[in-house]
Length: 278
Image (cartoon, rainbow, N blue to C red):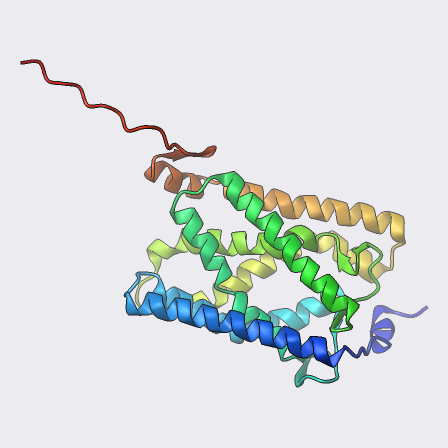
C-alpha cells in the first residue's frame, strides 16, 4: 500500500497566477495597516508597543518558517509552486503569501488581547473565534478553488477545508491572547526575548492537543465515516478550549476590574449619591 508520503509526491499543484498575485496584494495591504497601527502605538509610547513588534517578528520568522511547514506535514497540506517566489522547508513549498499571512495578521491576536484587558464578555471572545475562523476558512476555500493550496488525504473536508479549521483558525488567536494576558505582568528586561516564541508555542499546543485525533485519522487513511466523526470531535475540542479560556479566572479578573460580568459589561444609569441629612 502507498503511504502518505507517496500521496504527497503526487500533490504538486499549480495555482491561477492572477489570483495568487491578488492575494499577495491584499496581504501586503494588511501588512501596511498592521505597520501603521503598531507604529502609531509606538509613537504614543503605548505600554504594549514592544510586544506588538515582537509578535510581528514572530510572524515573519518562527511562525511561517518553522510552525507552518511542520504543521503542513502533520495536517497534509501543500501549496502552489508556480507564479510566486517560494522556498521549500521540510519538503513543503512555502510561497511568498504564507509569511505575508502570518506577519500581516499576527497582530490580530493582540486585538483579542486588548478585548480581554478591556473586560469584554466571554461570549464575544467565543463569537470572535468562530466568526474569524469561518471567515478565514472561506478565504482558504477560495484559495483551494484557484489552486493556491490543497488539503490532501483528508476525508473530512468542507469545500476543501478541514472541518476543525472552522473553529481552530480563529480559536488560536484567542489562545495566544490568553497566554499573553497571563504572562504580560511578568515581562521585564531580558524576559521580553521569549515573546516571539509565545505565539508559535501557544498555536502549536492548541492545534496539536485539540486536533491530534484528526491528524491520526489522516495519516491512518481512515474512511469518510470515521474521519467525519473524529473531525467533529476535534472541532468540539477546539471550541471547548476557547470556551475554557474565555471563562477563565484570568479573563474574569479583567471583567471584574472594569465592573463587568461574564454576561457583558453593565451599562446602567449611574447610581445616585445619597443626599446628606442636614
